[in-house]
Image (cartoon, rainbow, N blue to C red; front, side, top):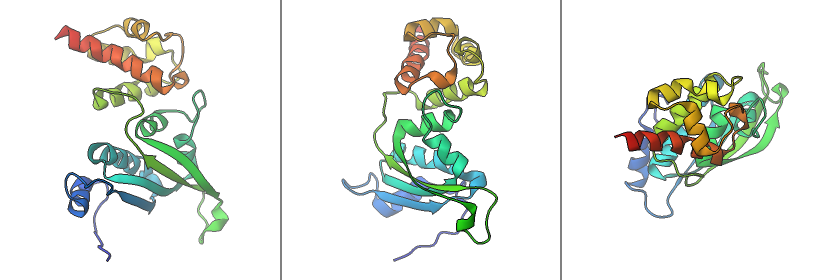
Length: 204
């Protein structure tokens, strides 16, 4: 059986669609596999929607997606590289990523102007414990807005929001403020957010 849904994927309530298919909550062992050739100009928003859906419902098993090569490079990037950033980190919280194959422009007719790649996202429980995912996302985005700055400087806007000096949170997390955002491992990012988040809780 095939159901065709004609809709804007960025406006569609994917959680409602998933609930209709699987029930709410999904029965044990039930999960959807996502397969898609994503429009390259909106691939990042779609990826974030899938990550949020997987985290909120537990109803996604994996996703096999064709993407622009540059996006795939960011998904599988290693700490300390130029491709390591917001997309790498937020994906790694909820999924393991494997590059399955790369495709040159000549693999398509007509040939696009870019190279492509196919990746698999295998969804799983969060890699680290994060009490406030929205706050964590905000911290990561703030850091990488100014990725060439040191952490002490890049985190100033987030520190102002949380009423704590970045240096205080960095010291509590055991992270050197002279480092740059792309050098932080997942465990360090989680520890840093706990320092900011814990300060906010203790101040209430």
